[in-house]
Image 1 (cartoon, rainbow, N blue to C red):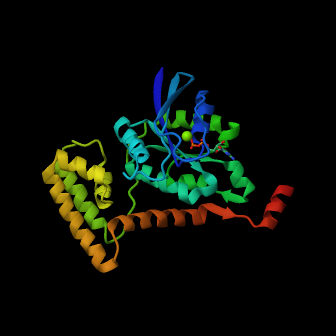
Image 2: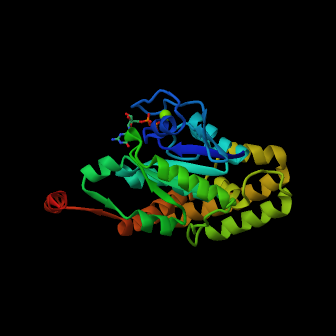
Length: 285
Ligand code: GDP
Ligand code: MG
């Protein structure tokens, strides 16, 4: 029996625990307020020759180091290297929810996107082009209504299919613009030279975290390799001063802007909101 390790990630209240319970038969508490799952919970689903191990991670909006939930979620992804990450998205609030998905892709994790709450989406007259979203992000997209168990079978099939591919951890490289890209590249080169694979993190992700001024990652690098830290910090100080002087902003803010820009241009093509009249026409069919 082959074990497939699957992490369930997502914003608070996106329906992770509901889906986890539906998949594993567990009875974890479903809450309608954020942050109910502070610890990770595990459950199993045996199917064919496979045993799918699900871990319900704490809900987070981001993978920064600002909260305990975010640290638990990202350290699990990095240290445990699950075979697949299933990001459960509240599809009726796609823009906000995709911010986390982008960061999971930056980390290089093999991702499956679950568009949950499709009942809400339909009720609101929103039309999501899932195949196009899947194509543009390069990951499978599965629509669900976790509350009613809809889409569960398709998700399990997709998990089995993706697990057979033996997905690798390759970051989706986004450009963060002409002000940051050269610094990122310099940092990646320095990390690759100095690091000798001492850290489990992808070099590109480490560089990004330095640019985001991530205290946890800075602390880890400083402790493990002070010489590398000094080099990276120097690059950071230079680019940071440049951003402040010429753009009156911080690298961290530019990175967030690029993520949101990427998402909003994606959603222009993927999402259409029907007018009230169109909605009535659709429901008449
Ligand atoms: P979590 O914080 O991501 O673990 O989310 P929960 O599983 O606790 O769900 C949050 C709320 O959303 C609960 O009230 C669920 O009953 C509800 N919910 C979950 N899935 C769906 C769905 O597909 N459609 C709708 N309308 N509500 C859902
Ligand atoms: Mg939960």
